[in-house]
Image (cartoon, rainbow, N blue to C red; front, side):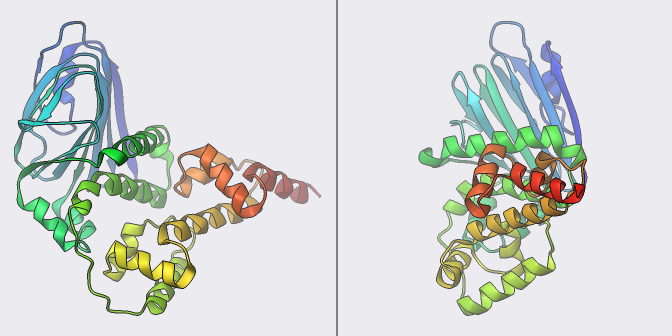
Length: 318
């Protein structure tokens, strides 16, 4: 799942006709001043794309976002009123647009944005364990309000993920790219999943479910596994998986997955050569906030990753 990247800075208004990848947008500058900003278009494999960027003054933008993909649009930061599809749009809200449908947005100040594009079949598979969430997709156009208490944290997480993808995506291992994609989808689909109260059937005991998941993780080796992949693979809802892991292991599955990834990093560092870089290993295993990664690594293993690396090199030098 290779990541391709196109990015540019601009200091003229015409660049915003390419505000979304693979789509020609009709844009009118409505704010005064010289337009400056940045654009970045990424493709993660052949079914998932992202456009992100910023611009310095207000615009009105319209046009078909994508002829073949569902579009998730989000304002990450704005200095003025914003609306999408004639609905007010606060930072963190999600504008959901079906393939082939027109969009109409008004962003009346300096803005930072993100738009993600996903093929219908992949989105349906991603949400398959939350049948109640399908209701949001019955409407071709919708604005889904974010939980105000979580919006700021979601925006920060998305920004960090995007910064890492822009910097490291083209050289990132395929498994890590898929993990990053799932993390982005997790954040963008949260308003859909929060609207669903479906809890799913419980076809297996908690012990059997956790054992099957654990076997799957062993067979997957050291590639990073996202919780959404487990839900798809075992046809189980997130709440059911959460309850099962708490019952059997005393921790939520996200904590267990994170500790497994930390263990995989630990193993790589213990076997690493002289050219191995801790940052590269961390990113390849799905970690983007390196300071937090180092702290969690130390809490779990009693030493910083740099200490593990020094011990390894000392042994290899003897």
